[in-house]
Image (cartoon, rainbow, N blue to C red; front, side, top):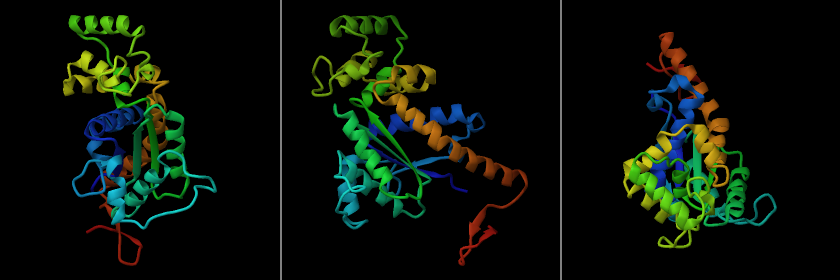
Length: 271
């Protein structure tokens, strides 16, 4: 039986690595029985075959051929930042067959965390979606979530972090939300700071979200949106996937075949 699908809407490939890695950490912590078995309880997807995520920049183009345009307000109120784009993305996933069990939408704040968050919430509240909808706003961008998990491992890394503390006047791993996303080369650019600390190595970046304790990530991520996102995963997604995994495991233990619906809509064992 194919694992439940988790739709993913993110900025790009780097986010497409970071967000699933964080989600998996929370799932294994909240549901210890799935450790080493994550492939049985989730598979990440975009809206095209084989795609692992849907990029925010591609939502309107993809929606043009999939769902009719929508006009009007959200709950009687004007659309706030990204609400229309987020609602289009959800409708695209709603049109998929099979539908995902959940859709995770993670957006950079671009220094507008409250507006971005409220816009995503408008989209989530606009309909009784047939799947869980989880939201994340990285303030000011994804790199800050990675920085929250950076712990120096070598003398050069200790030296690099000390130099950045002196240069910035604060610890960028403890106060990443104070970095400025306006320019990649700016003194307070999260991208520049992360590059200085990790040398641009993908594997070193990954260790920032796979190795630190979740409590460390939550503490360092209180002001950059990471802690709030981890809570969404723990409270909204983990219980649903845990129930699904438990039901499937019980069926297999009892020797029951997977259940599918027949043409009339009633359930029958698969043969």
